[in-house]
Image (cartoon, rainbow, N blue to C red; front, side):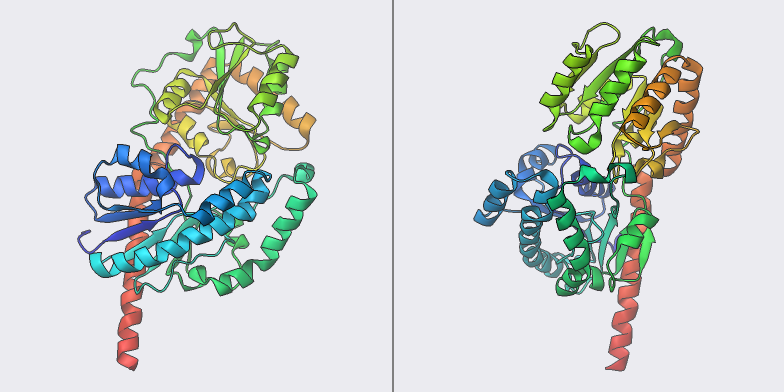
Length: 435
């Protein structure tokens, strides 16, 4: 039964267009809403246009409006390196949003009889939460983080960034004492043991491990009748994600430039970002720049595409490649697996939560040269073995269906909600008995 559940999801953003962790609250809201469970969503007005298009006239979606403070933090932050902006102006902006959410959440709990509040983002285990004191249980997570670059790449962070990161880690316990949402939460959800270890001292001890990402199998699905991989004379490798430095697409381009001489292949880059211009220049220097219909041995930068278009392009490809060096989540790995595509990824961070040798190839991040060499070798081997691609893809598809479907994740989350509500009820009964 679900008639006792009235769920409020509070998040900085709820958006498929923003990507990354912003998609998580949208998925929870989408599935709960479709199941007929009373669910409210409180998010920033930056996503109003997208959500209005998806759910026109839905009065259970409420927005925190942009303020002069938000705009000032954005203007300052856009002049800073992305990671530094996230820890400084971004944090102050998120804190402002949560303060506004507190007032709205308190009102909704009172007026709508909310029985559980869920804060799925930010996914950082150290960042404090201001969502507490509503008289109903608060569930936070799944969080995912507590990672750094692989040892061989630690210098990828600049000195200022490393100092700020160290300061943030050192002050996490103090910030979580001053803003005690994670101390007073009913449940904290973590994606893996690495994230559990990164939780600050003194937070809620009821910690449950639950993988952060899932897959919407209604969108990311393999064709009912897949083409025999042997039919592809030229194998298409696809990268999908933001073009930022830690995604290491430059290493992928160098690996592709080497691998293309040994097997007929193309590379499709789906995504946009601050590194795109430099990557296109590098592709030209390597002699691999091409167009969408270019010959074998070329790379095409398709830019940002809507999710449905990305799904179609990935479905047409043969293998996903993800050389990222700082991938906490890596939902794109699950999306490729759901389409029966094998994956070649760096053996670091999020992909390790999903991939194993039965459904992909994990490349050890030993050095820049080591990654280029290993990705090139893996791409050649994948291109030369249609049966291998098919076998890896089928195992990945079965794994996604059994472990990572969003419907299954929401089933698990419903159990978490109910357990939190039961503990809350017991606590209230004990207090009543004592007083």
